[in-house]
Length: 420
Image 1: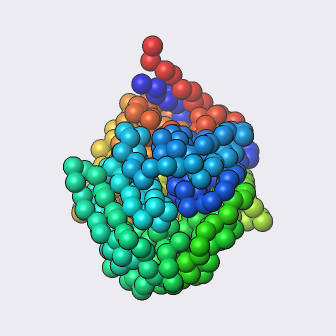
Image 2: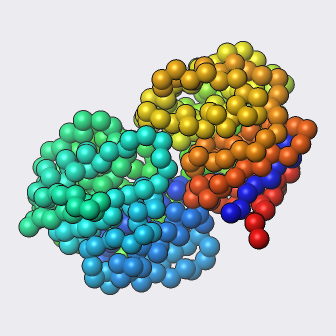
Image 3: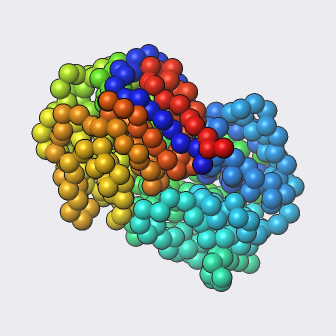
C-alpha cells in the first residue's frame, strides 16, 4: 500500500548510476537452469521481478546465495523438478523463460501461464511454434503450459512477428538440442545479445545475436562461471527524460550510449543537448522543448518501454506531437491518469495526439503498469504548486531500483509513504 509523494518544480542536476538491465536479468536467471555448475550473476538490479524469479528458482530446487545486493550465486544442478506452478510464477510475464530452460534441460516443462503488466494481448504462439519445430508437444491445461519432447533436434525456425520473448525462449531450448537451430526474423534488443553472451560464456555456441538471424549449435552441457548484466537501457532513458522534463542537467552514467541512440535522436529533435562519453550521456535541457513525432518499433527503433515516459515529455513541448505505438495494441491505458495533470491528449487507435501545455498540475495518479508508473513520477516532477501522489507503485518496484532515492540525490522532492 505504499505511495510516492512528490513536490514538483525542482530542476534535476548531478550524476545518476544506472543498474543492470531488468529485461536481461529476468531471462538470464532462468537460463542458469541449463548450466551444470555454479553461475555467479553480477550487476543484477535490486528489483521485485528479480526477487520473484529467485523465489521461483528456489522452488524448483536451485540453491541460491546472495553475495551482495547486486550479485547472486546460483547452483541449478540441484533443480529436481520441471513444474513451475507457484503463485510467484504467474505474477510476472518473464516467467515464461522457465519454459525454454526447463524444456532444454529435462525435455519437459510445466509452467503456469505468465502474468505481469496488462496492456494488451501478448500471445506466446511464436514461443510454441519454436518449441514444436524443435520436436516438443505443447498443450495448455487449466492455465498451465505443458511441453514434452523425447528429444529436441535443431531445425530452421522463422518467426512470423519479431518477438523478444520468443527469440530468447527458443534460444534457451536450442542450446542443448541436437544439431543446429537457425532462428530467423528475430528481435535484436541489447538484452537478447546479453543472454546469448551469458550462454556463450558458459560454453554454448550461439552466433548472430543482435542481427536478423541467430544460429545455435547444440552442445552437450554448459559449465559454470561469472557474468555481469548489461546496463538497463530503459532505466537510462527514464532518467534522461526526467532530466529534460525538469529543465535539468544530468549525467546518466554506467550505460552503453549506442543502446540509447533512438532516444537521444528524438530528444535532440526536441532541442535537448545530449553530450556523449564512453559510458555516459549528459542531458542538458533547453528553456523551450520542441514538439516531435515518435513511433515505437523493435530495436534499434524507439523502445515501447519508454513510450509512456516520452509521452509525458511531449505534453510540455511547445506545439503538437504524435506518439504512435507500434508494438502493443493497448498501451495508452495511462492517458486518463495523465489528463488529470492537465495534459491535452487525444487517442485515436494506436496513435496519441499530444498538444503541449505550459505546465502540469499536481494530482493523485495511479500506476497502471511498470513504465506507466514511471511516467506518473515524471509528471509529478514537472507539476508545481502542490503534491502529486502516485499510487499502486508495486508496478514501479518491479523494474526500478531505489527510484525515489536516485531522484532525491538529483534534487527532486520525493519520498515514499507506507500506509499503516
